[in-house]
Length: 425
Image (cartoon, rainbow, N blue to C red; front, side, top):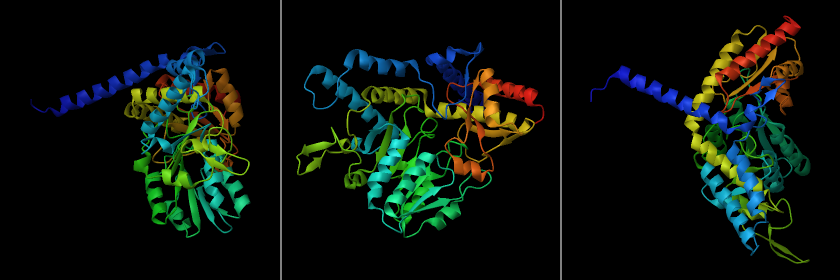
């Protein structure tokens, strides 16, 4: 068959259009998107804080409580065995989702915050006076405060990689700050406040060249990017379920098996033990050594369903759709009078942060809410980053697979209402 470039291009456009059409049909999977706010259709643009849940995830959690409810592990009765099978199947799903080499490297946690605290307390038990912990100027508080606490306990010192005016990391400064005293790097994969996608593979390679392990905060990455921890070559990867269309109070810590084996338990109690006496306790195998107490069984099962849902949609389709939304929103933002974008990195996820003239971000958010548009306003748990850009707070619109160009238009129509209220401010 003759290769016609015009025909090939038309087929390519048709494929993209078909993929876009397919992903837009997914809106019907999310029941909350049918509700109204002040008699206006809900436009939900607060996905960076938490995403909405598809019906299959809601059903998965409900099914556990209606049909399987029992504690996992060690139970001999039928319900316990079935609950254990479902819980451990979710671990297998998580292993495949991030391409961990072994299921023992997948630890269920309550979210990214708990995962980072686990590493800071357990791996951090080896820190000594004068050791250095390297993080960046765009970190969420959850990747700052646990390391500060580790420094207080050990006498280690916190070092910070600067951020430039576009919201990109200073890679040269990162390399310069790596030193013989650096014991770990804590690095966000995607900035929650800026949307910047960091070159984590390159930075991890630089750290490993100095023998330094790397923890990646993937909370904002997993809804948007296909994650392969083996390809990234990171030592720890942390993410939350509730930003990935899954339940709140769920998440995953990936850790290299050799590191997890060498780390002491962080919390003590049921399921993390092998043998207990008043003289001595021995600990369970991985990953249970780090899963003390009754876990969020229903949540883990539903998180597995969320991972399967996202994979069914497909990350290529999600990325293309969200990139188009971000381009649309960015073009509108650049043309909107008085609007200043905060975070203009070359590589960005679907997050748009901005300030509007002299109107406080909370006032902007309140007016948008009356128009049915839900955004996040404030410092986004990134106060040092806000100080870096000379603002107290920003308005953050963050997009998900179910958002549309109509949502983007609604956002800017609502911002026009803000200008009507405050004038040129």
